[in-house]
Image (cartoon, rainbow, N blue to C red; front, side, top):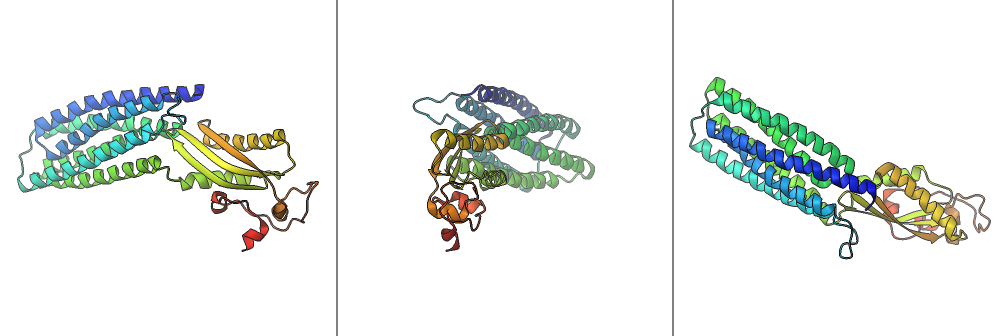
Length: 337
């Protein structure tokens, strides 16, 4: 693992450790607020915080595992652990959402008297501020380091903040109106929202585990290469991107003039790699297969100083996502059929 990757992994680990222990403290504060008030919407917040604590420590362990260097058994590293962590967190968020809806529904049928609202509001307002700050830091660093575990933690913490703010608004409304059913309705609404959030986290993590193509990332990459296309790059095809934690593994076939020697062909690969790393960061591994051009590709080749050209240039084939993902070399006749 490179020095920059090690520094990123250590930084991610420290942040996740802070989140895990801070979530434990916030959990205690929320259950204390519930004990004082008997508010089911505050219980909703506290139940979700249990998920925050467990997920925080799962995320901490996953980042510890993903930071390990490659070994014989894991030649691509341990980055997939982050996807598994996010999948577990998403599952727990779903379960918390179901429990919240159940408890809120029961409380709607059998209301419980709410007490000491002012103290409860102050307590959970404090947790909302801390959660928001931790979530913002986690999201920013997760996106910068391409860590799904930190992004999942950040989204979860900020979702918790939104629900806490809405619960505070509901408690203030109850204080003014005295209508206890508002407490349960708010809890049910946010229970459903939490279920949706859990589904989204699970969907993203399963996509990573199954190596689902990130079409938005691929489109950006193809557009970057097309914009900076060299005359020596006759064709690009068989483009693939796989995510392993915060590392991108990119495979592609690059067609260059067949008469280039090994050093010339490697220089073209270095140029291609530099473009991708400049846009997507150093946390990238690039595997490029060099193809030599064939005579049927003269029709699409813009290299006008080619000493072995057999056919006149007729039409350039634009690099698009569709043709970059194809397995075969492109040619003018093929594109017309």
